[in-house]
Amino acid sequence: MTSILLVDDERDWLVSFRRTLLQYDITSSENIRTAQREDEVFDILEKEDTDLVFLDLMLGDVSGKDVLHRIKQKFPHLPVIIMTGVNDIHMALNCGKLGAMDYMVKTSLIEELISNIKRIIKIHQLEKENHALKDGLFSISEEFPVFKDFITKSSRMHSVFKYLTALAVSPYPILITGESGVGKGVLAKATAELSRPGRPFVSINVSGLDDHAFSDTLFGHRKGAFTGADSNRPGAIQKADDGTLFLDEIGDLPNTLQVKLLYLAQDGEYQQLGSDAASKSRARLIFATNQNLEDKCRAGEFRQDLYYRLNTHFVHIPPLRERPEDIQILFHHFISQASQEFQRSVPEITQDALDLISAYSFPGNTRQLRAICFDVLARTQNKIQAKDLQSYLTSNETKIDLNDSPLPKVDEVIDQLICDAMKLAGNNQTKAAAMIGISQSTLSRRLRK
Image (cartoon, rainbow, N blue to C red; front, side, top):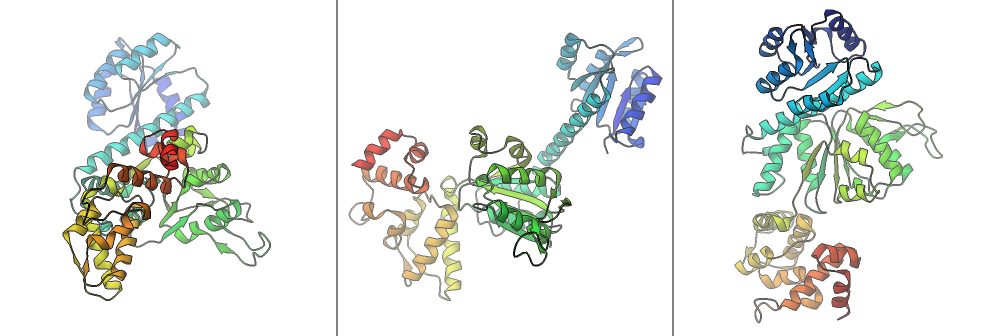
């Protein structure tokens, strides 16, 4: 519960305001302290943990502004709300400059006053949590056994692991972003094991689900909810129980389903098909998308309130091309993994093969690299050379003979770049041009050549 200090020289107001805070369940009785003099204020602050101070502008012969200044000097992160009987905009601005978090008039409507107080407490709770998470980043061991399935030596990924380790105690949702194939699902599963070890982990790709399929898959249905519903069926939320529910590709959801997701993320509530009663979810929620949700919000394609709710804890996985130090270790890992599955000895990998694989951009990221490793192992014997990999890394039109031409021509590089961009953009010229930083007309001319 929030620990509050009320400061006013009028005892009647202290008693009245204390009663109001209790009446509206702002905090508990034992978490409210009162002070009528400046020395009492600092005696309490120095001896007891305090989350929030309500300070009257006049404290006998002492100015509340002076007390505010001293509080912010000694306790800079402690939020202080100025309470006054007069609505004075200039005074409010002056107090804001001194560090007051808000300025409230005692004669305001009680509902408005309570609403503002709840808002401020919520903001402070989030700030406290963020400070705790940042502090935790520097006290975590460099070893991350729970993330062992995410093969990397990237310092950027180690920072992600540290952050997710610090988030283990947080009840709020986590949003993981990154291109297709970077390993969002692997990271989500490891995070679930970190925060709720030994409990269920349920993963659902919600892309392409219509309203009925989405609700039935996530929330389940009651017997008789629709034709063919011959028995009760639990949804993914019930299956996740007190574990973790991972929803992938949420960026593709239409607005009607975004509303349902908002209620789930915000209130932990959902409604089974065929039921009039709302149920409470106990699962930790992790979301993922390969899309830029900020851009979708600006385009009116994604709800801002849902985005802000999901974005409480945010993690971005950089693409493989931004982690070149990981390419060779992943290549060795997947070749070894494939050798085990095919019950073969691990083949020799030549240096020219490693050089070629390291120079490729991997638009499909780790998933693409893994697929290449498994297929090339099936097609080769005891040695993997550059010539064995060339067909996977270049288009049919721009295969390069490494023996005759160690480096591709400029036109070949440009054509390959355009080819990769067009594949990623689903042959949408406007999107492909934006990806590689040229105009759509320039790209169109290159394609016509």
